[in-house]
Amino acid sequence: MRPGDSGAAVRAWQLALDEWQNDPSARIAVDGDFGPLTAAATERFQKYAGQRQTGVVGPTTYRAMGREVVWPISLALALDAVAGAGIATEPLRAPLADALAEFQITSRTRYAAFLGQTAHESAGFRHWIEIWGPTPAQKRYEGRVDLGNLQPGDGYRYRGRGPIQVTGRANYRSIGGALGIPLEGEPQLAAEPTHGFRIAGHYWRTHDLNELADVGTAASYKRITQRINGGYTGLAHRELLWQRAQRALGIA
Image 1 (tube, one colour):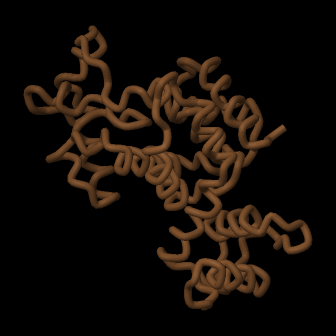
Image 2 (cartoon, rainbow, N blue to C red):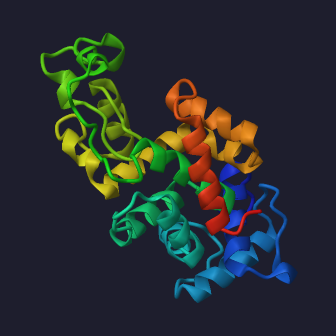
């Protein structure tokens, strides 16, 4: 991103700058237009991060912002609030922070919605691989053309993994291709936090869930649930986790 750009990515960057500055007198207009004030704030952040002050947001600047804004102490508390009992959250912090920054999940309302949904899907980050019975539903994974499960054993091989439980050969192939991860050949990679959070972030952004999270209402969160689940399974628990994350992040 650079001066003159506009759109949702710029707006996300402006939100991140305001979170980082944490100074009402220095706030910039979060309007999606990369103007002089946004460029100046970007240069201030680059100076703080020990980078060349170009005013242009490249991968290095974005990752640095991820570390500064995406991982304040309040987000650590939010992760603890939604994690299952006995789950060590410290090893999850860096891969989660990187994924949140990469996929422009860069405000407290977005953090809360993302954490509420992914914590529910993974049982408080306890299950990074779908528990296999197989149940009757899991048996039906085999031969599912819509999931791309065309070879014997694909149902089990491409069972749900990661904090958003990516499932099916076709999904492993397409998401792996988009992120540069060989998921189809090595599906177990989806269960590693570094890759798993990126997969969840990619799904989040490509399904326009940042925009719904920005609304911040129960109705918009219900719509997020529908886009992830295909229905409203576990809605009450998802809402409970969302509310816990909100309280930890200081959202009224």
